[in-house]
Length: 307
Image (tube, rainbow, N blue to C red):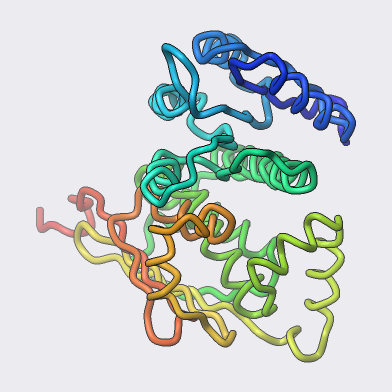
């Protein structure tokens, strides 16, 4: 673990802060602790790039966890910091409220060490990916902005990340869309074409075998020739992106409905993130191996309107 990988632990109970800090430090993380929401926000605002993840207690006096997240999401420099919510509240309403607020993961007390470390690792990796995508987006001025329609094929997670950057750079508000695009494209490669289930992915990450398994399946004759097709069409004030993989699909109706249940806090983060990424519409089709994304934006006078 990189010594600079830093987690902010926020909890009003000193014993809880100590236990969580010890577990994270033993795993190699640098840890800072805050006894309340106000202190946490001050630390985050003073150094927005300092922290790779926040482990936040939901129930705190004065400024609770939900209020902290709301203020973080209102600040562009903090909205992408992954927040892991720890709470004793695990009813459906509480879980959905947390997911809708932008929580990266929902941990129910008492906290299990292995699950905490697995989720923290995922959050840190997500933060690193988002930074890379955002930096690539800032560097790219895309000729794809001139495109009215196009078709692309991707095979690997690296292909998916590259295409997400290219598409986002061609869209108004691309900085809001890039992470959702990346998640949907990665889902199509990893869960669709490579056939890795969400629970299996969690286990592989916990065992530090995720990258190894992805590489093995990309070389496996059963998977190596599968492609994800991406079709882009722009008409007036709407861009539609259709992502189609060659996997077995999934019961998307049940999966979307699962967002209303406590079990959703452990699976389906990619779908949840996509729904919070600024898309006007996300429609799953057929057996679940195809998704259409709608993005609304002002029409270009030069291309769409007569002089």
